[in-house]
Image 1 (cartoon, rainbow, N blue to C red):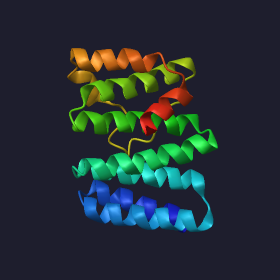
Image 2 (cartoon, rainbow, N blue to C red):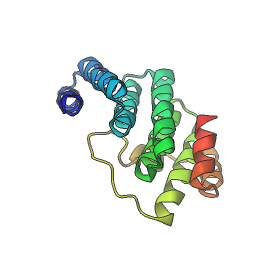
Image 3 (cartoon, rainbow, N blue to C red):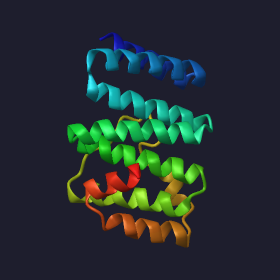
Image 4 (cartoon, rainbow, N blue to C red):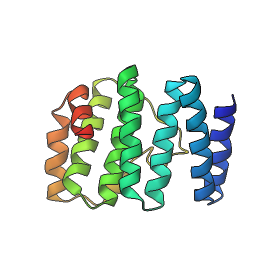
Length: 162
């Protein structure tokens, strides 16, 4: 309950533009999750940390945090989280101007969602719908997207982690 409450407070801080405070609260929640073994919430906190770090422009740290989330979610076979985390990594790649990787990761997430819909992630995350990626496409992005769409989920996760 405390980990969830900290996450809620982080969400409020984020909505108020207090990104550093949100990051601090997400980290506190993550620490509690690690201590008690609440892996599902841990994955969510790692993704949230990555999302805020990306918003702050700290892209290497953001990528690392989301990759950690992806590892935890993959171990739990949480498809919904995996699709979300692939989309989030696609946003981070786009922010880093790696259009091919952004397309590749988004294509993999889209293909998995089309195989069996996973629903929408709560809108507290900026990447719930990767509209930025879809507005400004280029040939490199589209080539990567087509490559990603041909992968099964486990292969996409392996590629995202490698």
